[in-house]
Length: 174
Ligand SMILES: *[C@@H]1O[C@H](CO)[C@@H](O)[C@H](O)[C@H]1NC(C)=O
Ligand SMILES: *[C@@H]1O[C@H](CO)[C@@H](O)[C@H](O)[C@H]1NC(C)=O
Image (cartoon, rainbow, N blue to C red; front, side):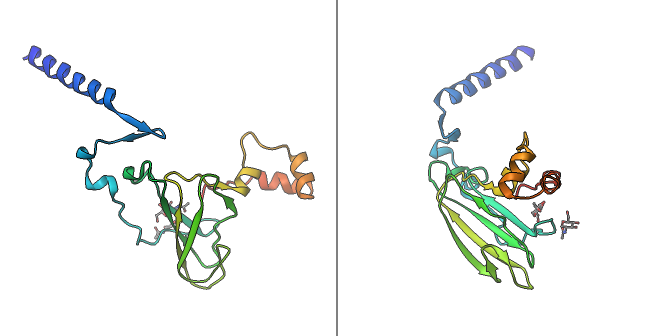
């Protein structure tokens, strides 16, 4: 019995090793044999569901990129759903890897600041399977290690106390 179990293990290990040898990685992501692909590899559920915007900035970004849909690997496209509470803000940011088309589905949004009294929602298409977002406020005031408050006080022409206050905030990644 023990010998049989061992035999199975060795067979399994051999198969895993073979799989590893034949695996193809692109951009650090695994390229699946198309014959082994399943519906889950090209499917994302719940883009229609409103997200919880009860946070300090009043917005919530739902990402649908290669991390959620493995089948997007090498395809250079992804999207996000953005929910905005009234007066919610999707903060100033840059997307170093992607171009973006933003499609407002409902509500009033001005530069992704919801000026309306009701919730708003938008879908953004992005020209990358794995777009990186750099939120300016996080990069400037939430960076680790921190940027010297002398530098920031001079750059923004404010008192160092203001910079220290801003650096002490909890910067959500959204
Ligand atoms: C976004 O909404 C989801 C579910 O509605 C929640 O789990 C998540 O914590 C929210 N994210 C932020 C940053 O508020
Ligand atoms: C939304 O998030 C807030 C803060 O985390 C929480 O208190 C609240 O219960 C959540 N609302 C829903 C509907 O999940």
